[in-house]
Image (cartoon, helix red, strand yellow):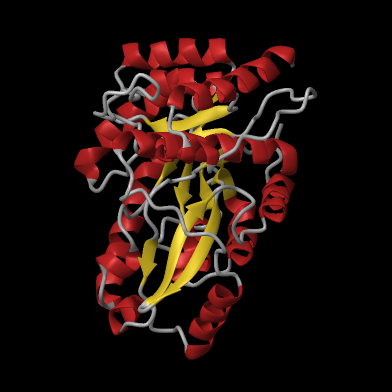
Length: 363
């Protein structure tokens, strides 16, 4: 307990001292850690370090993370409970190194994996599942779409073609994860509405395929976060915990991840609901520090894949945006130097970990 407390306290002081960014550091103060702190079991999704992952910026304070070993070492230092990181390209010898480092650190490991698109991809998919298991992962998060539904598709037919391909991919993946007793968790990744994803998983009918429930993504599809969590929590194997800030703009609304506790997601209720259905579930932070996403709900092209949506759906979300508009400016990075962006990213992660311990009971 004392060791973890000291690591976090010293790490935060060291961050402010070494960063040397003056006003920027002042904008992101770090609260004191209570003496009772026993560690912070909320883990980190690799996307929380989008700027630092494979960073080319020469920085002595925020050196880039070259691989999972670097991420695990850093997350141990800041007191996180685990990591969720991609397993693509892992050879057996690297998987063993990850396992050794993970076991020494005591952190949990969740992998992230791409689905096989056809039968020719199955062999490589199985190799990655085996490597992840060898490293000690028990859950593999995946997505069916790497883009955003309203940007990738412009008609119902395009979306249904994508759905057909996604179902094929899941059907190819299921026998492999079942064979190796590895949980595969499909994220709601701005592609599926919550009910659509729940139906897909239930229809698949496999104890080895469930959901990574993302707390905030589906606001981009005009769904209320708690309705999404309520729908997906019974199927959840893993999580992406995030809070969301919104503001109006001329074509709809802006959407941003913001530090936990500053946005509109009912984080406490979401955590408790996930615990109810899966008491051993890990809570992993996905705090992506970037410019706000534009959700263009006031232009016709947005609605191409939502034939059943109605004016009431739009009215409700616009009312919510107006009533809960983020008081401060939404996070932006385009106006920052590379070093400032790295500092901003780290500040956001640390603030979220602190909130998770103090307010979500995850410490």
